Image 1 (cartoon, rainbow, N blue to C red):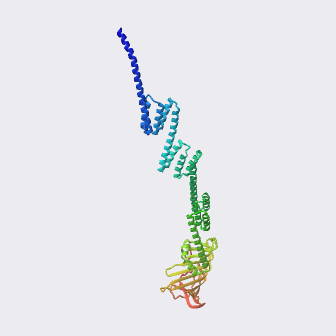
Image 2: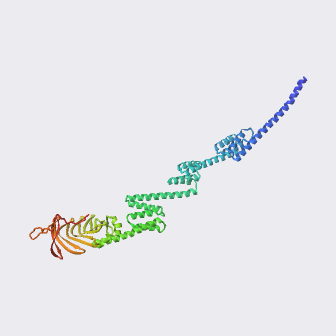
Image 3: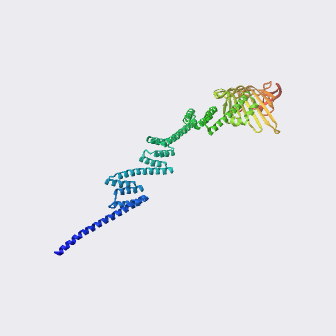
Length: 507
């Protein structure tokens, strides 16, 4: 009995001791766990402060798994560590999970802040990708990235600016303008306003270039009225640029309206400086001088041909300026009074440098009174020939005369001039009826002969018995007696059998 009582006493004594020991153990374990948590939390915070975000994430997750500690602060720290590695979705997942447990203001504010940071990061990332594509001239890809950024922040002017600049690099100025206007509808960006002004200048330049290009096409098509309208529109659109003035002046040069071209350029240069316009003006002045010299020489030639001034004619057609600057443009018409009317009028026609006509025209054919002068070039021999008289349907028809002159340089260098003048009636360029030839050597008449032509054939001269007078030259026949000083010489002029006399060198 006594032993039983003693055992009970021992048990009663041991229970409090056990409880005390257990309490001490629990207190120690709790202290030890809290100490470990504090150390882990401090470590995680240190990693976060140092920017060692991966280590911080590991430390915060370990702290989160511990029994002790402020789970709200740990969640915020863990979220900040995820933000450090740009894992915003995971950061928000941590905070929202904690917010479901403890709806504190601090957690809510962190959710809002990180949500905003996520948008900033994604926005800046899209801009960065876009900038990389832009730098590599992959402008469509750059626009796609900038559009992503615009979806994130629809009222930031930078996205509109960058998209517009990308379109500008591809010369898509219409699209650039649309983008800028869209941005200005949402923002009051000074930068967008400035870029819009540049784009509008580019669009004006494109419209300006297009007008000038179309004007050139109309000139090629000889639709001059439309070309002039487009030049005027281009000048109205951009009055300070010189190209429309210069190209319009070149058009007037093309149609040889030099004074209108000069007025146009001179008027522009009164208020603008342009080397190109100065060059065009200089070109116009030279052309005007050239035209005036041409007019002067053509007028001299016209007058000389009208009065058949042979020496003046020869000097002019041998003038290098006539050969290189006037005859080179043949065939050409000239009238000293202005525009040449070849339907019915009077003027000069230069077929080439050696074939020139002055006289009447009808339906673009020689008609009425006229002179056709022919120059025949040779090494040691120079020949000149002209017909002066009546014309009909481009042929000598009526009373007229031919003048044929041969200038020969002999071995001694002396010039011998032989001239034959034939006068009478010409029908379609052929001599007809009674004709007369006068012969000259070095300007002195040495004789003349009269003869008859019937149906284009030169008739033989007959004696008093009506028989043809025989020629002393074989294969020829006599057509008339040679006269000197209006007296017969008893000598005869013979021609080859079957001879037909006509105006030479007709076109």
